Length: 494
Image 1: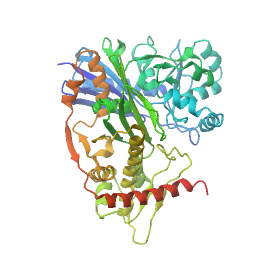
Image 2: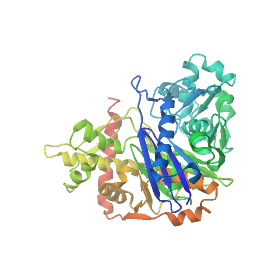
Image 3: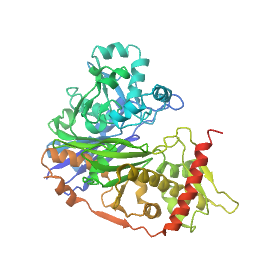
Image 4: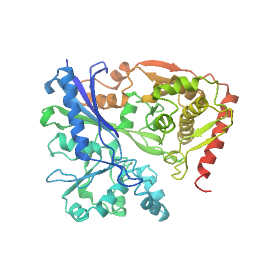
């Protein structure tokens, strides 16, 4: 039997997962790596550590399964998006640590772009809002602040890439400098209608075309790997959230998934045409495969599962993250306590970097259980905010929400989410949907799986949460949330 290897390079760890023909994970290896915080608001990674941990877990997972590279049909890559790397083409040595998607050092530069009137142009071309979250301003910072970088870039001596590009470069011994359409669409340099880098934006941001990778499909054979995985086709690439959408087999327009991780990422398949957002979401490439491009609307929520970590590490009211569910379930409701976890500002659809975490409704009767319940409900309310913006943009009312990520194992949260949305929330048997999406894309390219219809037969639900909350009660909760949200947004302005 052959297997497909998924390399899942995330923000805090690198993982490798082997999948069989049924889409079942057969072996997993994972290794965390360092998070670097050289200044307040700055977040960096060591590119060499990203590579060493990723190839290390690939070796480990093969050893655990007792397999050789010849037992692999293909390798697929999924990665933390927007994180920006720049390296020397001749030596492969990075010229600076990777600037992580969470990094805010370019916020003032992005504010200047907005003040100069470029927001409409950038949204029309890229589908994105101007924000330090995306790669372009990070790359501009590297060119401006690394000694000699701009002149070397203009001479074609440097290569830019997101994490997928860095992994491909190293997997192929520096022979291939490429990315896929999903990752390219997160740079703020990619023209959605034409599917390539945009000359006008490159000129506006003073970024030389010579440093950019070639944009390829998300499912095709790019090259054969060298080194540890010598001879194995590298055949699939997708940014983590698009990979999760594909792993959930949301391949038809109108299908939607939400990933509950450190943050939340809600994606709606909008079909063959991008939908411009009027409600501060972003339009992005869902994937490009078999000569066709699918697009998605996306809403990014900065703090989701991280609020549970705060309850554990910051307040000490729970010992493990799993403790939050029984604690929250020990009270019948939130006791009118609302927690807005705007610890890093607010993402979609508010995009307020100045909002701050806020708790409202505290009385002497409030307990740790009420706070735990309010924390979980705050995650669900943020998702509802994005979902309503998506429906307003697309005119599509989803029939169900497919969910994944660590926090989707919390039954109380999933039921409350279904109640707030008024649609079923469905949790799959295979929760490793990000890695599975990368495996699916790679497997399709080499004929390991026949077609998308074959993939849809592999997807199975583990549990379905049906909405049961009366509409009046739902609106009461939503009104309390909106009031708390307004106070969170006012807190930094008063």
